[in-house]
Image (cartoon, rainbow, N blue to C red; front, side, top):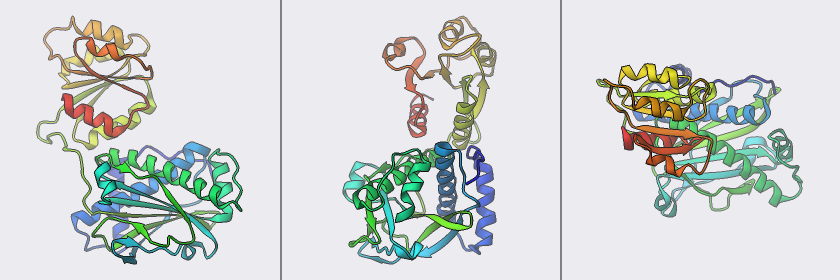
Length: 343
């Protein structure tokens, strides 16, 4: 694997890639719903690459091979013969996602994610991700190790989905198998096709990730495109800004940015509808900004959501104007819920 930092998800570039790749795969008959599923497959690719870079500063040797395949199913379960992926003993782990806990209990799944690896190579993958060594001859350790990997990918994928505007889905615990799942695995009711991503290192397939999804997953209600609401983000962390900006823009919000409280005060004249505020910043921190903001006249008093690395600040919501505080690193879905409550 070579070191190259995957850039933050760019929604516009991803949409352009959808059209390019769908043409390459001759998917000209895609409806709007089908295109949505294809977009999710490309976002899954971005999530897998990001997991490996963030954990090991490594990337795969090329872009993954993306294929659309028919599902072999029986009574709403998908049959799996994992040895078709590697023609060798294969371990795989499954996570299902649903709208809520009731959906998981009733198996009303909206998305299924499956990660496959050749069993003998799993210890090396986990070592690359900085996890303790496991014994490839111990099936229980192998299954748990593969489950760790599918959890990592699913967690990152949920963050990518949030940037694209999808609501948060609840994950089931992982289930792991070797070569086959005797009763199949749970999938959404309706789809007849799945997407398969094959990742390579030095020209050899090393990892396969599959997804089965409903064509239409629930999205957040976007802000009005005709009268776009403005959100002022006051934070000095470039990495945070790279994450939150595309997330908010994907929902139709206009994003105003300031790297400290002084710049934030200057941008109040643009009348933001809501302020996302960090507390620890140079020049003028969040506390000083809140005090100075009270003295500013001629602008609307926008509600404030505080984002901070500090815990135990429950009393801060008693300060006039502050509606909520959240701990970094934030969950995109939770931030969007907070914004919709207060804007």
